[in-house]
Each structure stands twice: as structure tokens, then as C-alpha cells.
Image 1 (tube, helix red, strand yellow):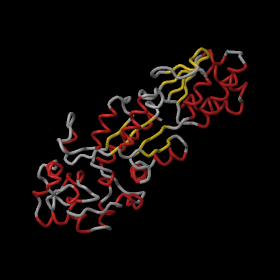
Image 2 (cartoon, one colour):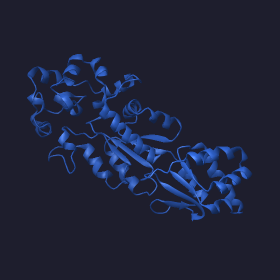
Image 3 (cartoon, helix red, strand yellow):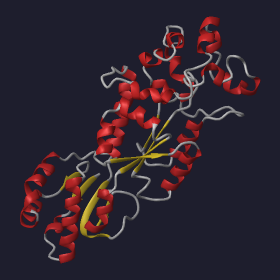
Image 4 (cartoon, one colour):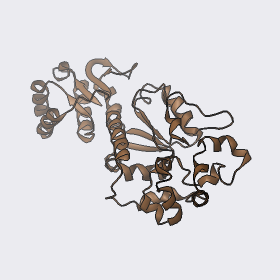
Length: 325
């Protein structure tokens, strides 16, 4: 957040105001994720007089603050609202600003164990932000995420201070295009979440570009589990369609091979790609890597060199999280 202090903050003689102003400044000293904007010629003498041990610290904070365009703007004022009212930018008293400053960004994941492993493996700063208390990961799998999004939308603060991350659940790259919807008789949970998120503030959610978190597991990690399946999946014949492969359950899980009449609509979503491979390749990809394959994120080396497309996606996610924090 960007926390701006009005000039009147430093000239009010009201005892309760000074107390609440002191308290919010102490919180800001602990919550360094927020930027601080203020008139330094007024703020620093106030700090020197009331919290001298923090005067130099806030001089540095003022000098290093960034005014990020997509962050929440909060103005602290003696005449501000006693509660958070309406949409940001918000103008509140120092007392009302304390909860905003002290609350971490709530990041809702489909699975707060395996999805967290994925994010920590691909975005190292995520672990640091969690350790500092800037982010609070939460579980929101299945229908729970759609319900969580609806709950956040009903609260002005929650919908700005919550971030959603979920799989795309797409089976073909063409399904990432705008306006796509799953065919009748099939479902796509990622699409459901995406539609629910359209009423959230911009940049408060991220749909993965690949089918699921498992599609981000490195070749070396999967090779250790099933060499033949991994060799085929990352081979020239499959190419970028590996991003939409059912890593857990394989082609059998999508009703592609062996053909499953009950899953004909789902199988058709891959637009015949998997059946265009050689019989040997199809056979190698039938079984997948198992339902517990997500655990393999804990075996990704910290020094792993991620591909350019993953780095680009994770950089965008990091930017959005920094804005939301």
C-alpha cells in the first residue's frame, strides 16, 4: 500500500490523535512492505520529538518509498473516516489505518501445501514475504475458491487485500483465448474461477498459463520418476502441448487413451493432438506420473534454471503481488 500522511497529522495537539499516530508509525516500522509519503519537513521533526529512536529510520523510508501505480492508496488525516469507506483511495484516521497497515495480503491457493511448494520453487521472494508476515497463504481448493471470491467481493477491504492464484485447467492452447468457454457436458474449474474474478479489482488474481502447477515441474524431476514417460513428454513430437498434458493421470485421465466413451467430450478438447502421436508415444503417455506428483516441487533444486516463459510469467505474478501487498 501507499500510505500518505496529510500535513495536518503533524500539527494536531489532540492527545488521542498523537497516540494513534504514534501507533500507526510503529506498525509501519514493522511492516516495511508499505510505502510512506509525507512532507519530510513536518514529519521528521515530529518523529524526532515523539519517537526519536525512529527519526533516522523514517528519513530513510521517505527517501526510498515508491509510488506504485497499482497499489492501494491510503491517506491518513485527522479528519479522515473512522472506518474504511467505499473504494480506494481511502482517507482514514490513524486509528482506522492501523488494521490496514498491519494486515498481511491474503493469498488464496487451490492447495496451501502443493501450490505453495510450486510458488516457492518458481518465485523465491514468496517465501521471504511469508516469513516477514507480508503474505498469509490460505487454502481455497474446489468450490471453496469460488465461494471465497464471492465473499471477498462483498467486502471493500477484502476484495483489495486478497489475491487468488489458480490453475488454468485448459487442455489446449486455443482454450486460453478470450471468450472461450468449456463445451457442454464438460467442465473447467479454472474457467469458473476466472469468470468469478472478473468483478475483482484488476491485478488481484492470476490464472496460470499452463494447465496446472504440475505442468511446471522440470524435466529432470519427472525423469527421476518415469524416464520413458518424461522422455516422450519433453520430446520434439509433443513440444509445447506438454504444458496441457494431464501430468497426474496421463491420457487415460482425459479419456484419450484408452478411449473412454464417458469422457468423449473431454477427450475432444485436445483437438486430436494426442492421437496424432505414434502408438509408442501414446502408450508412454497413458499413465501420467501419479496423483502425488505435486510433491516433487520439494525436489526442485534452488538453483534450477527455469525456462524463459516461466520466468516471464513469474515476474508478472511477482509484480502483481507487490502491487497488492
